[in-house]
Image 1 (tube, rainbow, N blue to C red):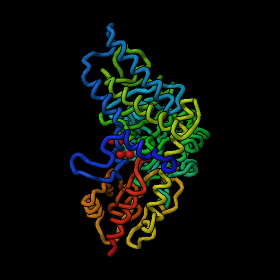
Image 2: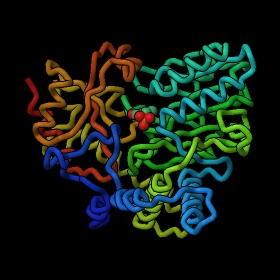
Image 3: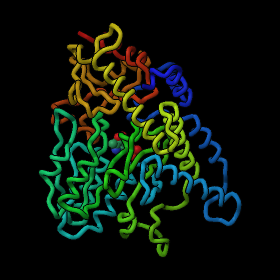
Image 4: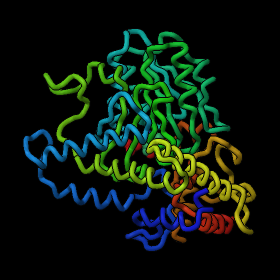
Amino acid sequence: MLHTTPGLIDAIRARFAHVDTCPFQGPRVFFENAGGALTLKSVVETSARFAAIPDNQGRDNVASHALIDIINTAKADLSVFMNAPTGQFFAGESGTELLFRMIRTACVNAPKGSKVIGSSIEHPASRSAARRWADIAGLDYVEVPHNDDTGLVTADAYRAAMTPDVSVATILHASPVTGMGMDVAAIAKVIRSVSPDCFIIVDGIQHAAHGQVDIDSYGVDGYAISPYKVFSRHGYGIAWISGRLTALPHDQLIDAPADGWEFGTRDTGSYAAMSDVVGYFDWLGAQVSEVSDRRARIEAAGRAIHTYETHLTNAMINGTGNLPGLRDMDHVHILAGADNPAREGLVSIVVRDVPSAEVVSRLNEQGIRTHIRKADHYSGNVLNPLGLSDCIRISLCHYNTEQEVAQLLAAVNEMAP
Ligand SMILES: Cc1ncc(COP(=O)(O)O)c(C=O)c1O
């Protein structure tokens, strides 16, 4: 495990900016990773370097050729990182914008009278896009209910709602409210077994930082991530699309190459920053395995991240040292079950008799950053069926430590009535 290799957690933390100090607040523990993970120092340096370059792509000069090479290298890096040997990667405004673009394209090209399927567990990015564009394209929208107790939607739940006339499907990889990861490959397989040509689009935004993206094994057509949630920076999103989705008529300039999905001039630095992210996973894989193949190292990093994050969430739930875990605190309720094997680095709780906003602010006063999720248009789909107006989201990444978990437990324990 990451923390059993001497010095490794320190070496990991040294690669990130603002690990234990907020430039606005001072010392702080960062448990708001689902809102935006820490940024790699290499990404900060790369972004500054490229921000100073005036040149554009598509010119016949040395700088322009270099920029194109850097973008192509980043796309090749992404295809190893996400195991996508076919199809293409492109950048957009944000993960949300890319989900809208992919879903819109699939819907407006779908046969009239066909259906769009998605689940109530999804973030509004994909749910809103699917409902809006189903409506505009004259398609029926079918909602697959998630399980309130587990915070998950299963392949069986999709199976029960699937019909051969479903032409577009959306899947959430991991929930930013419950923290649970879905079995994307199993869900996609069920969809294809009933409607083989269905266009399947996945929201991987919350999942990506927890490692183990393996697009080739999913059998899907689109996958979106938000780079600032996977150790890069704000300002763009990255999508992968299959050859089939690439070929659908889509928004683009008249007479532009048919397979182009990018809009306008690209930010080369944003692509170069993704190469930094891939380089980081590669480095981490080399610390935890002996394998020489790059993809194998990235997979080893993903497994190590998942194992260590589970160790941390288990410590949070079951206790560490002589501190009781969240499950042992009578005033704390854990969403989606204390022993949920689908958990990906996130624990959402409510504290009895203390409003969630107050919990978040009392933790902030002690330098512990968490976030409230409200039953609004972002999280109401998960919280309303549970009869909750809000909850506190504690989200971690593999650079967090057991000591930080202990700080959180001590602070929450003190909130007992
Ligand atoms: C699962 C999921 N989908 C979509 C989004 C929206 O991402 P962005 O704001 O980066 O477009 C988020 C952000 O929290 C998310 O967690």
